[in-house]
Length: 324
Image 1 (tube, rainbow, N blue to C red):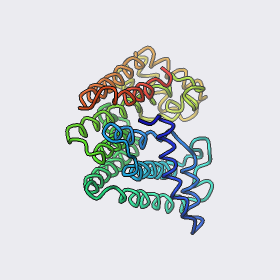
Image 2 (cartoon, rainbow, N blue to C red):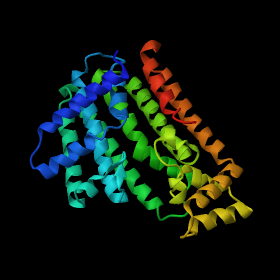
Image 3 (cartoon, rainbow, N blue to C red):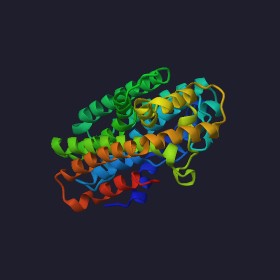
């Protein structure tokens, strides 16, 4: 079995093959720009780690791993455009370096390139892989639409939010693992268990993002904390606080949510104090643990030797211990 750095090198090498496309320059340069920003490569990494539970020859799965990463970065490119974000991984976003039309067209091209890579999967697995990929990509669009709707709704429920992050974030992790299992020839039962593992790790990971935006150390977390509070982003933390708040806490929380002019740090400090009083940090961590435990149980039931599963147990633990 290869180490994580070795697997990432394989992924990056496969992605680098896309750089042969250079013309028209304004179409392909933004794609190379986005893919060169780095990132954890967690989705293709999980695909390869799943694959090597059963096989150790990576050539038949590497194009699919690269396809998942290209697709993921396509979604980020279009997300940045929809959100009008200025930075991605501390670099200017594509629509700022080029323009909005270029961001749309280069993003569309990335989607097509991801299918081009997927088509290299061995023929006997291609139908299942495409069906899984199509299901995931459609669900991600559904999740994005729900996320957009939530921005203008004051009555979002926790269950709706959890379903949104399942669609928008967790399904791509889960599908990456199912595709790895399918290409490796795993049983349907194992493929389902690995999907369940990825889905629940993805849910726990996104909830941890909500938590760290309030309680994380910016030096460890990698970005400023409090942005979600400052922008009234509908996170699990805010939704649960709105559900639980009563009396003075409810009045203050509503006041901060609907106040147009405020000092950023004052709002973050005040809303965090309300979270603390309501025990929102504990509620969020309990939900994270719930998903994480389901993930670990699913992986435990996969029918391969326990030693082979150790890298997946380890990466799950690392994902859930960024700064808590």
